[in-house]
Length: 304
Ligand code: GDP
Image 1: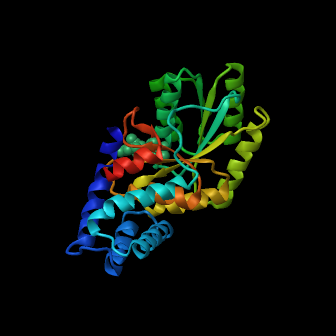
Image 2: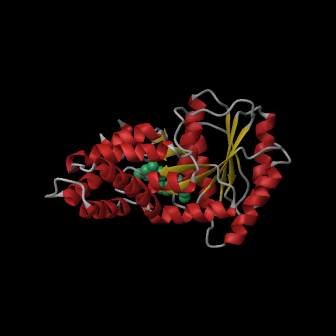
Image 3: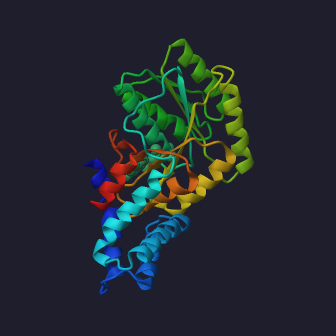
């Protein structure tokens, strides 16, 4: 139900646009397709993905000769589910970590304000609930507030945190965190990093250095580079995904703030366009408001 509630705004807005798009039309014709294209783009599905969906519906219109507008919901649901099914996204059902990697190292990247710290706190809580020993690393040393906020979450979830003073070398914090995690026999390490997109060369160098230094402790770290994106920013989230994937190898995505936004379509577009699995979605500020992203549930709840 949290997912349904989280997507409420996206859904209501989408269906009201959709009903305007087909108003007074019995069958899907070129006009309806044009309107539908606009609805999808304005729902932040993204241009590329919208065109794919429109192509698929056009092909169906051509094949079936007649497509009633009353069936459009069901057809859209099918085509979007089909599109997501082909993408490398949303097959997880649980907060699990792969076997055989101990500690499993997650490096978290993203610009300030997207919900990075909150997502780390929520994840730590879920992993801890699953019986895992979690250690946090405050490698966003650029802002004192970032370190303090992570500390607040560490206290709240009651997991250890490794931190140094503001301005210290992020790679050194990451090194200390992994060393401490290994000595404590921890299962999961989550490393927060600074996301200063305005200086791309610095960002790239910093992330590369953090990775290199971590590998002195855990040879194949990080096992996951999780990019956090604010779903309520629509096209900005696409742009950030683009920039971060240029700066480092991003292996998974968390899309936050899907509650209270009408831009839920962004999840569909981003999954399709970047072919990076969306693993988690944020649907509120509370500690429980992080969900493992499951594409079937997502599409179902969007079209229910
Ligand atoms: P950071 O700067 O990226 O670390 O961002 P924070 O984790 O500090 O989050 C920024 C703000 O977004 C805070 O007020 C969070 O409570 C809020 N936030 C984070 N995730 C979500 C979410 O999924 N839904 C909502 N509504 N707010 C969120």
